[in-house]
Image (cartoon, rainbow, N blue to C red; front, side, top):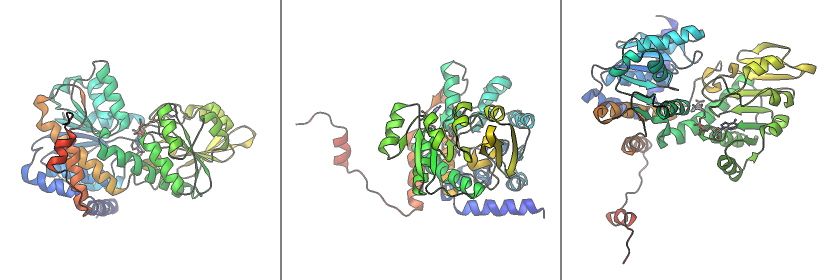
Length: 413
Ligand code: NAI
């Protein structure tokens, strides 16, 4: 048997054992086949946890066509193990060129999907821009990440969105766990493993204090780092201060940071003027969706030379011999570093539980939906939360009838 195939199968098996939510949903979907006969177009980081999502979609009756949502995040062994299964076609591969990456996403669309499960709206945006003729067949899109929801809302605001989309990212079951704990733990783990450097006692600058940034800051503090936060939103800055972090302008943080981690979903947040102020040996990593947060153009312009000093670490030598180290070429550090495995399995079990249940809900309610961005109905998110608590053997209290009535009362005797 092909070595990659076997190791891919073992990775899938390990993930499967730790994904009880998908296990429970797949039991239900195997019985009632809610996605029977559908073609699902899926853009995702192709690795073991997404592999279990794909398998669960197939158990629900679908044929799944997938492409990577980052050119560097595919695990080829897992991809081989998935491609060997019936009803799964994959155009993913690690190390695709920009053109190949683009072509793979379009190939997914060319299979005329009935439903899209998306990451950063990579399929939804191309569907509208490059394959508008296929729009009518698509019931909608379930979007997994912050950047994708931003893009879909931008399309909606311009009247350009032609399909209903569920903002899966915005559910409590996704955001409070995946963005916070998943990004926090997996990014720090990859920075530590990739550099083999100590975080304790170092100045770690977190750029952006949204859900991901908050998780990164919390975890870095737990590792003993001195955490500095930079923000543009005054409320987020205040939140960071009251959570116990130093807040300052990036211009000031640039001078003292040992590690810089971006998590803004924004462009060029670390630019030339910050690089010019940084200390010799500063390490730069990105946890936001695209490789645009640390300006690569500015790094190249500022540097006199650069080379890969270790797998996943590029050394940029600036004037007077100052060195800056960029991890994972500025791509998602937790998904594209050499040893990256993405978020912890249990977190993705929750995310994919909501993603899957949302996709099914969207499809089953397609006739009632308009071309807009919808929040996922709370009952879908609650259902996944209840399954998770059950798998943890944790029981919680119920509201009494009296308490329910009290919470709805506004006239008191
Ligand atoms: P969010 O919207 O909650 O937070 C982003 C924060 O960045 C906001 O508070 C905003 O004010 C701040 N910000 C924007 N521009 C800034 C600038 N120039 N300087 C400083 N702060 C700035 O978004 P969330 O959920 O934290 O996601 C952030 C990014 O991470 C997105 O691209 C998202 O898709 C991605 N993401 C990555 C994951 C991973 O596995 N690495 C997992 C989940 C999300």
